[in-house]
Amino acid sequence: MIPVLYKADAVTFSTFGLGVLSDCISCEVTEERNGAFELVMKYPITGQNYELIRRERLVKAKPNDTANDQVFRIYRITTPLNGIVTIYAQHLSYDLSNIAALCWSDENISPTLAMNRLFSETATPHHFTCRTDYSAAKAFSITKPQSVRACLGGVAGSFLDLWGGEYEWDNWLVYQHQRRGQNTGVVIEYGKNLTNLEHDGDNTDVYTDILPYAVQTDEGGTETVITLPEVLIPITNSELVQRKTIIKDFSDAFDFGAAITPDALRAKANSYLSSNPMGVTAPTLTVAFEPLWKQPEYAAVLERVSLCDTVTIRHSVLGITAKAKVIKTVYDTLSEKYVSITLGSTKANLINTVSQAEAAAQAVSAKVDRFPALMTAAIQNATNLITGQSGGYVVINTNEATGEPYELLVMDAPSMAEAVNVWRWNVGGLGFSHNGYNGPYETAITSDGQIVADFITSGTLVANIIKAGVLSSQDGSSYWDLETGEVVLRAYATTEQIVETNDRIDEIEEQKMYRLVITSSNGNIFKNNNIRTTLSAIVFSWDENVTNELDPNQFIWTRVSADDVSDRTWNQAHAGGTKTIEITRDDVDVRATFFCDLIDPVTRNSLLG
Image (cartoon, rainbow, N blue to C red; front, side):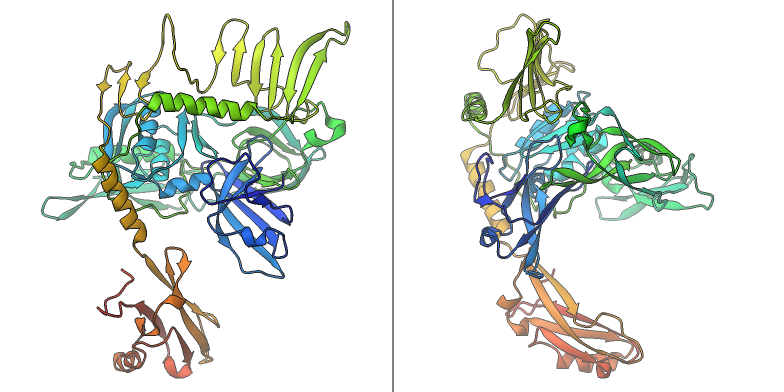
């Protein structure tokens, strides 16, 4: 697939947007299980759409063999090298790192209801929706403002920490699966389709003991460190001979002001160990292979590999036979084939590459007339999907003996071997699969009277018996939990609250957050008095380089060495007036470290916090 470029504020991606990046030289998408999901693309500066490529704009690309086309937000564009730039983009779901979730708590709430409430009660407006396979109710709370992505995973008490599972990021949809992949039965074998294999076993994160502790603060601000009477908890299944202890702070696992007892601390530590096995090496296999289902002579081989699937690797020469989960894929979007897949096991966490958004507003904006709007949106979505379609392939399967038709297929490719999205209609029912002809069929109407679907939108529903866990309003603010009997009705936010929240968000966005980086033209370490380099101070406001906008007198250079008297003389001579300084052997006596501060020109106070 050739990537397509869109504006930064685009919401739908069914058109060609700003243009097709047909001059793209390479484009690879890397996705990890519950981890990174990024795109790296190389593009020539002579390309017809080069001038349109900017940070924050969106790129749609094919991430693997089975998923829908995904959208990635550009965050970095390198300086042209030999007339080619490298473009780095993160999946659209990374925007959740900049959406502030408001504080709330519930002692017993279903994951569906909790996730809906998390996505609806935010200080930052967004377009994301969510689903989860889990149903067991648990206590969930957001004790301090943090990003929605952090609430999903990566911190103690997150959805991933409480329920586990594997996330699927599908543009605006976040789906928490109990098991995302399948046990496919696919075999990647030496002499058949295996082209490269690398086996890695790293025991860096393997330990024999854990030392848990927590810091408790009383009303007077006095801090007390709580540890266990036995101090260490042994990791019984550790493979190490030499003792190795991990020291872990569990302060964030307790509510502020709550009494922290050794028993409670021990329980938190044991729970952490059960979710994060730390006693044995987690081996990984990185393999490259040829997708046989794309070869004409293997047209009957309906095997595909996706992230979180379980596959078998065989290498007779090395004596390796392993069955493992796919934890990372690197996919070539242009040639539509995997560059490599990585098999092994990973800890249940999420990688937050974007700073958590600052949030101080405590109100929630709610929509009115929710269900009519929901129905209208669902009808419009269905209409957009069904109308205007000129592609696809219709195939009628016939009986080889009688020649009579018995099955109708509507597919996205001319043959069953190539098709990924398939509608299949026969005497057993009507079903849709996005995993090829053999399914599974997750959307279906079967001949025994059953309907299977992830999400059903209805204007009026008439039924004899409705079996449900939770009856909830669309935004999750009001609900009836039929399993626990809990009924909650909440009022929506007033117009004044919404205006106040929006004003506060505007105030936060207008604030500058400076970050100063010092670069050296000739390295950082020098020997034998051979010293000559230029130190340059570069200032970023958020991620934008604003050095040229600042007055040179705002830059204060200081030196720290073993000679305090000489340092004071040097510092007075470099108290301001330049963004770069030349360092020679005269500036360094044995050892010296150089710093630069950015000050306010009026108050003379530091702007770096």
